[in-house]
Image (tube, rainbow, N blue to C red; front, side, top):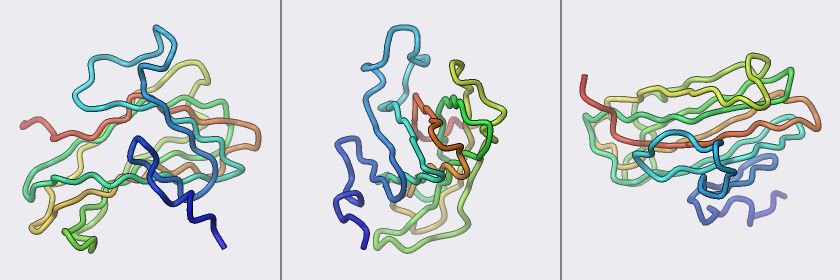
Length: 160
């Protein structure tokens, strides 16, 4: 049976569902490794998967009809695997509404010391949406390798 503690949200609002994922505020990073100006709270996460890792956060205050942007910077030393982010809109009872939005990157396209920016727009949020489930997934990473994420953000998308 899974360890129930791992399903509880950490101090940053993320819960690890599989694998090993550690979070820290971006301000804890060394100077020069922090991304540009933040629109929302930002975090650093290290995925140290045996092969796969999943972390999830529920964002409240979603408004139907609005679009939302999710983004992060990613680096990895793994020659194999894939990293993705998915946004699923939910009603106030947690029922899935509409189709999830997702993007991802092959880990072999990344550098271990150079963060690549990834972002996408999800929405518009369907009628009745009150929350968004943001899930980060690492699949097929090589053993003893890591996936580093910094500057994780979720914000209302600019009109345009």
